[in-house]
Image (cartoon, rainbow, N blue to C red):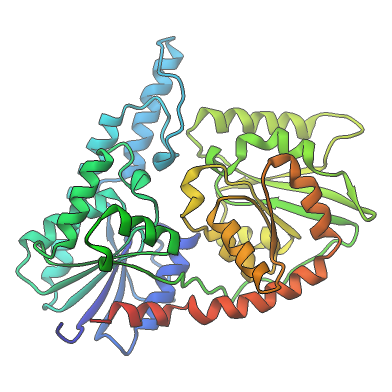
Length: 434
């Protein structure tokens, strides 16, 4: 491998200062300074120009996937308005912002358009630089893989692609091609016949899954750390009269949003003399009709009357980074009832944020988050609780609420352990490894 000339961080999902992608990209870019002649992030054209924390060029997404999704959603809303029958809603985890009725063929067309768009941008980016470039994509989806396949085959330059797969094979290939066809695509990319391409995941369960999925190419998949370091977060603020439980992040069926009636019924109204208050982030841009219906139900519940009603605050999302972090700062417990099989192996940005805010977590069994909680418990550290059924949430809430000081102290200890591996410097070391 030649000495590295540049690290190009390609992130079509980076559209604002908010969220997991921004923190991830900036952490890696800043860690690469001094080890590469150039370290730069390439973001969506809508990314704010005032950003100064790392070098960023706003050149990606001439064809907007968001615009394509909105067009499809508008079409099917129109069909509903005129009384035309549409397919029964089904969970499309890989495309949660698209109405379930939108046929897969539309999504396949949209993915190919986005792949063509990204490949065109990559060619222009690469053409301005000499060879020996390292191209890093921290959330490689199917459109990204298609674009890399095109560039790696046709480019005469010495390019090194580093692609992070952050969902299981079935979810990465979702709605685009069969799992078998996706396996063939990955094997082709890992054979080295279309250029230097190295694959990673960000969890050991995912790495194991991909190694089994691509038999004979085991050494092609490695586990990268999660380099999200939140050093500028606000201080915790506590209301001594209440215990604040928060459901934060985008409102989706797969994250338990539709289970709110069961969750509300399970939560105690008081604990050790403290009032229990639930704070729920909603998503004004949600396309899924089930999320829309549950949001309306939640609004009606909050507006209703009754002696046994749980105090609830609706947090209107999406929100800016500052507002979102202020919600975390006011939360005593994070509730993450992720019910989709997607989260058996996939990591969670909100879990990492909860660690930094020293906010204990309640989640469901057989998820990556549950594995982290159980691993910490094996070391004698209490950072959260795991439930087998949602009706157990109330009992787990009482356990944490009665021992909040212990949980926060243990989370502080666990955070130091977490940072010892999950650092951007470790990622750079792994990218440069022969």
